[in-house]
Image 1 (tube, rainbow, N blue to C red):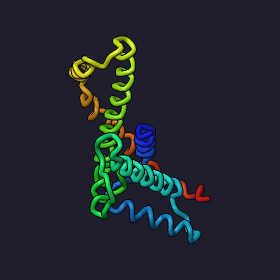
Image 2: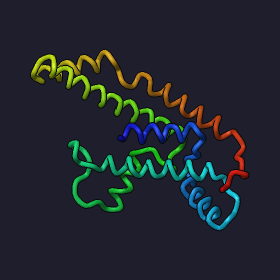
Image 3: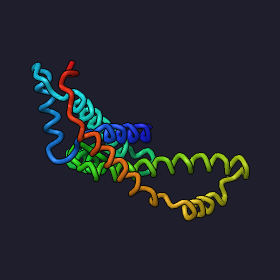
Image 4: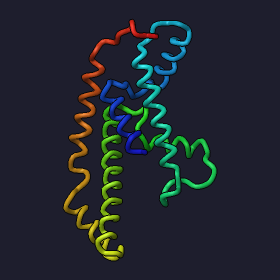
Length: 173
């Protein structure tokens, strides 16, 4: 699910995934040097490759028009670049990624909550009439974005702490 992918990206950031200007290129170079037999930070390479793969998956999920949003039809390079710019990625700063991940986590968790509430509401009332009002009241009573900055700050702090640890090049292969 998208939430699992976002949670995995959060885990990679907590483990010290380096993101920001030039990180995609650095990760490609790590891969080239590793394939040529040079010692590289294998963990940094794995984190970067994982973060990039999940980013691409999320960009494709954003494109999917099935839920009423997204981009139907064929996709141009400009469309692809736009979609990639809307999700966490290697080229984005750690603080930007932390904030995007926190927002996406809260949005996806809320979507799951609302789905569960819809099932419960229908089971109790045998109709969906009045459900929108119930959700509006719930959203008012449970603001989604109050905790996002705290969550993003904690994620960024974990990332910075993990990056301060020296790499162990003895675990290359």
